[in-house]
Length: 190
Image (cartoon, rainbow, N blue to C red; front, side, top):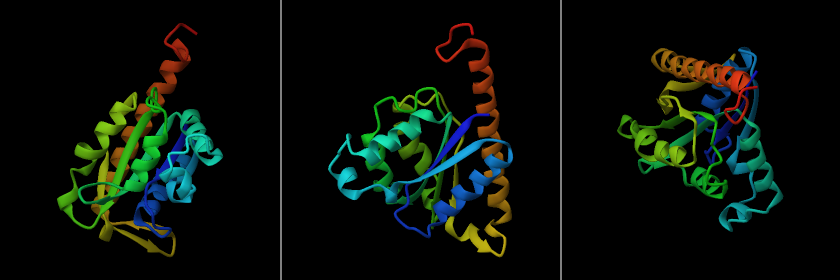
């Protein structure tokens, strides 16, 4: 089964972005995928802000991107764009760190005025980093992500939409795994 890395670009330890990523990660794990999580806020600030490519934490984060078949990137939307924290990490990754990867972008925010942030701010960066396939992402309103006795609860409309984009991600990952099995990692016959 493909491996998936979920990445939170939220600076908050109690963020709705993190809850949304946890919800999606559990769904992916239920489908048999090995899922790991990276909170960018846990990386050393001096390494991020000083662009210390050789810092052990940055080297490890880069390796985690390289090892994953699929990446789910979640970010809160600030000023109509993804978080500066996420941007800082993306700037430290190799230029083509997403080559061969399937990517699902997710965003959260307080207003539908930010609904296009994925397509106009985040998607071009992911494309420039060589993502093999970026499935349609989803913007979820903060008010649609709550916590209940069983964990994260998404409002009905948001839950259906997140399920739909997650299914598209799963389908794309399965297609990638099938292509690799028949052609090898570099497009040659296995």
